Image (cartoon, rainbow, N blue to C red; front, side, top):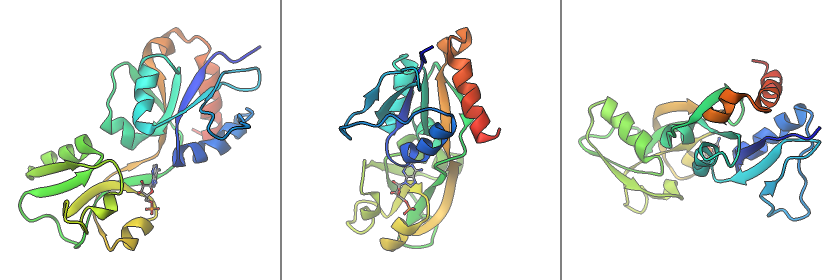
Length: 207
Ligand code: AMP
């Protein structure tokens, strides 16, 4: 019998962390002769695998391109997507979203924040009734204070080494994140081939 579901996994740290759990599920890890290969159809030894940007994973699952997705909670909060269910905390790729700045001080007056998490950052300040100006920036966040783009950033932190290397302080934690298994809600309800894959993940996360 062949697997008939595909899992879209966020590239980078999530993919690295998921590899071990995937093997524990008893599935072959798709080895490519070409490391740029990003799509592996399902076969007898494992579900299919799509490797994509974290921000795109919820959309790929919503459209049914993949029945399952694996992506950080940070991305799910930033890209809330109808028709997608969060079904399991995989307890890997732990990190936190944090407010950081050049001084260990809460912003005085309107806060200018460089971030790729525009929705998350806006919500964080709205909940505190603190005025905020969001500066969208898709990478090299740590540079924003030094180059005068914005005195504060909201970004992903794991060990804190990146912030430290750029002389930045972690002022406040926005929320803690880990990799989540998400599913296409419509297909999930029909149960077609998805339950056994879900049970497998559940067994290896010990939940
Ligand atoms: P660190 O220096 O360990 O605090 O790592 C911070 C950098 O690694 C940030 O710039 C993030 O972009 C990236 N990073 C850390 N953890 C994750 C994660 N779980 N998922 C995606 N990116 C991460």
